[in-house]
Image (cartoon, rainbow, N blue to C red; front, top):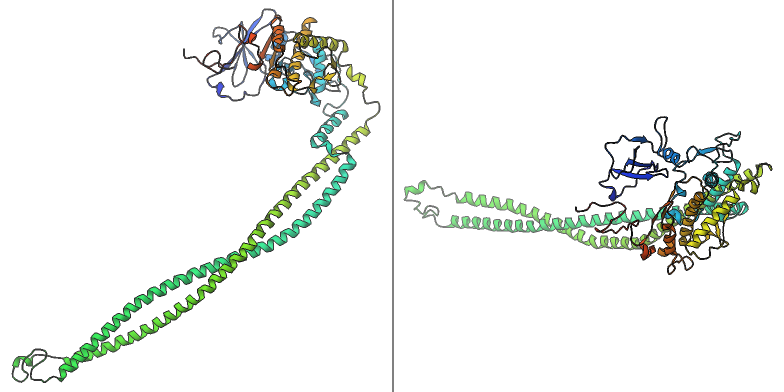
Length: 573
């Protein structure tokens, strides 16, 4: 609602909400309501304070960031109301200027939970590109005088200053690992790393050759085993086939024997019939000499016997052929059966070889992989050392090429922050800490080198996060108090998230405020300050019972009673 263009982080609590409404009251009794879609876009500005978007008032449209000739931005609209519009801040050594906006000054008024405990100045960023701008911003807040009158230096706008380049190189060197030593140590380490890399390459080449040979041996054994298993399976199938054929041929041989016996019986019967006296016909039973009926009987015994003999010879021939076939099959069966133990022995032998080769191969593969990992780490270290050597040499070249008259004296750089105003600001910060009963807070002064406060001889950021949180709150409120006492422009409000972190998550004994009444005095002090608005987000453990409820206190209950959370939920009614 104060000019951010980045979309809100998507949360389940957003569901059902379309717009955000923010009411603002200025010191001249001017009241306005800003309405913006939850997905972003321009603002609608209505005169007066409204809990719902008014439908009978024509709004003024405001842009979130860049304004046009016809449409103002939310930043210029608000800053104009508090006499902070059209202010310029110095941003670099070439006197480049940047406009004061809501976005680049909000961290002085709104402090989130991460920043309130951060190990950095409450006013000045650690980023090199922001330091000059933030020092200029602090100087403007303390004096009311901006940098509009500065004339830009006659240098190329796009070129970085030598100091900026050196500072950037220093940051890059720190990121890469400045603990590795100076340039001489780095070069010696780089030589050792390159030698190690060369030895690793030679070792990997040898290992690769050995591994390839063993891989080939392993694959040959596996293929041989597969071929033997296939041969064993085929011979087993052939044995089954031969046994099946022998079983059927035995049945056929039995049938042949039965047929031959039958035919021999017919032949013998025919011969016997021929030998009987011919008084009666053996076929029709009539007398041969007397009965005329017999004359028509065709006994044909000789033909039957001849046919039986012929058929017997034919079947005996088939039987002999079948016996030959059976003998061949039995020979094949015996041959295959004799071969099976040898094949099984070969499979067993190959399996034993594989049992020896496989673990060795696994170990060789593992060693080969480890060698590659080590080589990758060595290569990464080589690149890091090469990069560090390059950056260090570049930094030294820039430092050695700087003209003597180019460097500014320490006093000149410090003159950007007024000593007298910083002394008064330090008193306001100390007054708050003492009002709150904060221990060891008698001596507070601002250190220009660090851009932060020193409290009782110890840098503020050298303490635990609970200590840093409450002292950051003192710095933010102290700056607002300073502007009020010296009648200088300010937004007139501060928002603090978790300033009493020392009650919730102390890092150590020195950081622990539990058991003290600092939290009570903290809220007593703020409640007595009626000319400014202060919003505090705090955890339940840090809130004294005295301030657990009241007209200006909202408790997020996460229950159906009271207010559920920052996003109100619909009631049943």
